[in-house]
Structure formats: structure tokens, C-alpha cells
Amino acid sequence: MNNTVFRNIIRFVVLVALQGLFLKRVSDGWVSGSLYINIFLYPLFIMLLPLQTPRTGVLLLSFLMGISVDLFYDSLGVHAAALTAMGFARGLFLSLYEPREGYKLNANPTPGDLGMNWFLKYSASMLGLHLLVYFSVDAFSPIYVLGILTRTFFTFISTMVAILIFVFIFNPRR
Amino acid sequence: MRGLMQLFAAYGNFLLFGLLELIALILVVNFNERQGLIWDNSWGMATAGLDQSADWLGEQWALRDELIRLQGENIRLMEQLDNARYSNAVRQDTFLRDSTEQLFSYIPANVISNSTISTTNFLRLDKGSNQGVMPNMGVISTDGIVGVVRAVTPHYSQVMSLLHRQTRIKAAIASSRYFGTLTWDGKSSRYMQLEAIPKHAILEAGDTVVTSGFSQLFPEGLRVGVVEQYDLSGGGNFYNIQVKLRNDLNTVRYVYIIKNEMWKEHKELEEAVNE
Image (cartoon, rainbow over all chains, first blue to last red):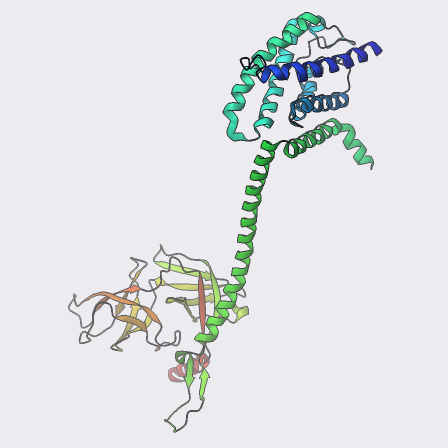
């Protein structure tokens, strides 16, 4: 149990640092302004929280994670709004994609525990929602709907690739 | 308190979600320049629209009061006109003395239903016997005459419109004083027919038609319309005259009911003759 909490704290710190110190610069055009790729890896923290985490905890952690990333991005509230929406939707997606025999008692929402197919469905839905809310709040007006949709689409592709790489490298089990 | 606890138990996460989103959006608006500008702009537009609606509503209420006030003012002025007063003078004295009595007084009313498409049209007004309305009172609007009260209830009255097959209004040519009867042929809601003007009368298109004052319904000299065209076809001794009405009965909203203060004496006279 303690081990799980510890792992998640580490994951929190690593993902915030990775997002705030490295991926932000990539999206700003790091390599002498030639590389502009938006990658939002930090939602992975909420996706990988153990299934037993109470929903209230998920919500509070989402908000905390969002605010932490916002501090690096200097966009207070935007990431927090998007990630809190995703944290709230996590319970809905989990019950939507519940296997026929139900979740095992100590299972984690990882490809190792529930299979690659399941994880792809789960992470794609969560990420799609997160990016849609993020770019909506970022644009803050319905007149930019076309921009919101194209950004969501391209960021979705790059981030899904990044998430899969991350999951393959670290292969988290808990 | 217990209900509140149960509410939190059932919807706690949703409420927490709403609260966190609210905090996040407040942060977005307050600490991000671009979103803050968009927010200020939209909020300004929304409240400006709301302000305008509120102003408009207030004006409507004020206008209602103003309308009632103006109706009262109109009545006060109309009742002072010569044609609304009965003169006691029998000879011209060397000095003028106020020797008139009120002959006509007015009751303001609103039209609550109206029709102009049948050949027997009626209007309904929102004043009735409670306000002193009685059958056989004339009804006018600011622009012309409207009809005659036929029936009353305590709160409402039914008015036979000018646009009715049985309408007989005593009217005269204003310049020559020849008098006749206004009727309606059931065709156009803007035209009536003036009958019984003898053929030796000199007419011209554009002559004004007024009430003659020979019925006790309308004061003398209220303008009804103008002569549009006339002819002597049919070989009779009277003109066929088309009168274009001054007021459009399709749009009439506010009217005045005319009360003849000496109606009773006229009735007594008629009864005395009939006996």
C-alpha cells in the first residue's frame, strides 16, 4: 500500500517536471524554433491512479496536478480546469469500459493488468476529453471552434504516441 | 442539516467537481490576460443587453401610466369643447356669462377584441356598467368614430362596429351642412357609403364628412372621413357617395365611450310622442 502511494508521488513529481521543464520547451519550439510538437504527458498520472482511489481523491489530485503544471505554463487555471474535468470523467469511463467479469480487487488501469486493447480505449477517451476541454478553455470563445478541433486532433496524435512510449518503457504495474 | 449530509453523500463528488471547475475558471479569467479580456468583453455585452431589456420593461410600465394619464387629459379637453356642452343661452347678452351644462362626457376604454372581416363586426371593450357604460352610447377613437355600444356586462361591453350591415350613423358634409346617413356595404373596411344627400347639393371629392349631431350618440362635428367619389347613377334623387374613413378600424386600440348626460330627457320626449 505504502509502496503504491510512494510510486504515485514519484510519478507525480516526474511527470510535472517532465511536462514543465522539457515538454513545454518542445512545444515552444525548442530546437532553434524548428520543432513545435504539443505533448501533454501529465494526464497519465490521473489515468494510472489505482482503481481503488476514491473519486474525491481523484478530483483533488487532478486539480492539484493541473495547478502544478499551470505554474510552469504561466496559465493559471487552464490545465487545472481541463484535468479536473478529466478526473471527474475517469469514473464514468471506468464503468463504461468495465470488463464483463468486473475489475479485479487490486487491479491498476494499466496495459499489464487489463490488456493493451482496454488501455488504448481508456487512455484515448480520457485524453480526447482532456485536450478538448484544455483547448476550449485556452481559446475561451466558441468562435475559435475550428482551431480548437484541429489543435485537439494533432495534439491527440502526438500525445498518444508519447503515452504509448512511456507505458512501454516503464511498463507500470502499480 | 441531515438533508444536506445526504445531498453530499449522493452528489458530493459532482459538487466538488463543480467547485473545482469554478475555482479553475476564476483563476483562468483573473490570471490570464487573453481569456480575461474575452471574459470582460462577453460579460459587458451580456449585462449591456440585460440592462437594455430592463430599461425597456421599465419604459413599458411608465408608458402604461402615461397612457392612462393622457387619456384622462384628452377627456378633460374634449369635455370642454363646445360640441360637448349644452348651451342655456336664448339671447345674446351684452356680457358673457358661463351658461352651459355638460352634455357629453367621455369614458376611456381599451379594445380587447375586434374583427373587420365579416359583414357584422363587433368590438369588445374592457369597460362595462361598473364604469357607467350603457347600451346605445357612441364610441370614438382619436381619429374618428368606431361604433355604438350594444350590450354591457359589469366589466365589459360589446360594441357594434361601424363595419356592420345595420350601422346607421347620421353624418353631414362639413362645408354645405347637407346631412345623410352613413351605411356600410360590407366590402372594404376603409370605405363607407353616405346616403340621402339630395342631388341638388354641390359636392366635391375631398369634402369632409362629419357627424351631424342629430343623433344623441355623437357630438356635432366629429370628423369621420372624406368624400372619395360620388355619382348619381340609378336615377334617384340622391347621390351615391363613397366616404374614405379617417381612422383604420383594423388598428384601433384605444377608444372613448361617449356618455350623453341628457339621454333620459330624449327618451322621455320619445315616449311622450309615442303615447
